[in-house]
Image (cartoon, rainbow, N blue to C red; front, side):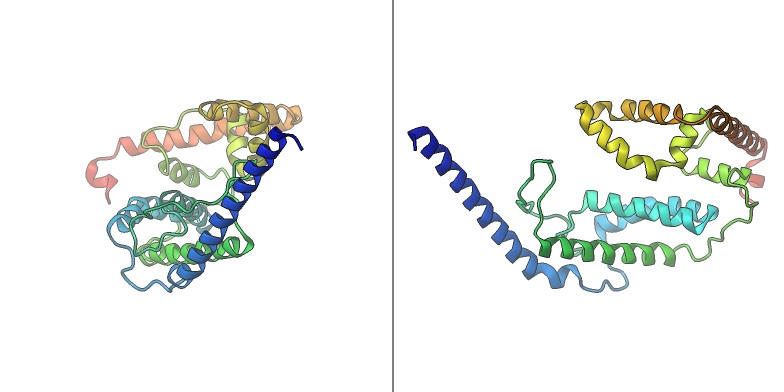
Length: 257
């Protein structure tokens, strides 16, 4: 074996040894902290920054609940994702921050590599937190009743409330491909992520690439289906616009009645 090959092999062994040490250290930390991470949360558990975070999403949850329980559950899933983007899953709710982020090894795909034990614990922590967040929002939204509306997926009332979830003014006219992309987000998410990764484009171009991806998928539909989505988009826009214009004609007293 040449001197160069020996040097390369030595560096590889050192790197592997370091990775094993890191993995062992994380395993010990996870095991020691497991009981704390899975402790049943009692009344009043949300304090300081945790409470501020939850309160910032409470009105949005109540508005989603006006549409349906399904919409509220979907909104809650988004809150769960935001929670773990803000608070690492190894952080107990009794802590504000984790001093040192766990040094999980990073794989070739750029994702953290967890042991089977760590993955199982992470799943338990997420599920525990999902239930805790649901209980927190549900307790503060019991007086919020789902509004009655027609069974049509394009019911004006549902459209209006959906608009209120993200807009304070009249909704902009969306195209058929935009409406379809929103309605089929879950099924398009995985193939889009794969296509974006393969494109090699920087993260700042994700939004533009997403729109191009939705247009491309939309053009795969038959002309009849494309027309249907376009007509639905126009109908939804007109319904929201009419409802919003009607609300602006009301006095402050009438609007709050």
